[in-house]
Picture (cartoon, rainbow, N blue to C red):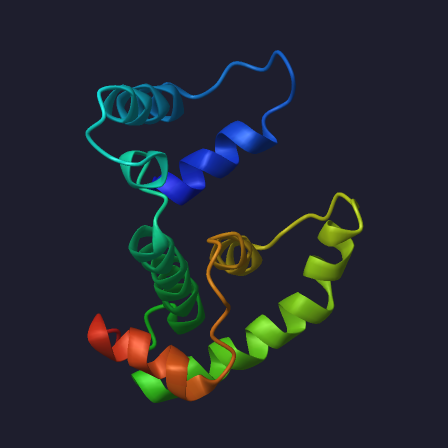
Length: 139
């Protein structure tokens, strides 16, 4: 799990709920780096822009893999499918989540929520999504 996902695990955990060991280890290591003056807090916790962009891109790549499902679709086809899936997610499930509703999510929508929660601006055009997929050889 990347730093952004771990931060969400901690932030979304219920009061008194035990945190996953991976999350506490990440937080402890980052806070130690910060307290020793090795880095600003955001960098020590790997919550800087680069890490957030990588988290968003990883979530989009995971979503593309779900859409492909072994079909061997081209990166351009996947980018177009992902653009439409993201629009449906933002108009449906995300609106409900933002209104505090508990929404069951498909694996695809879980990936799209991870991308949304990355802290980076969503990639809404097929061209921008294609660029991410191309860079990672998804096709």
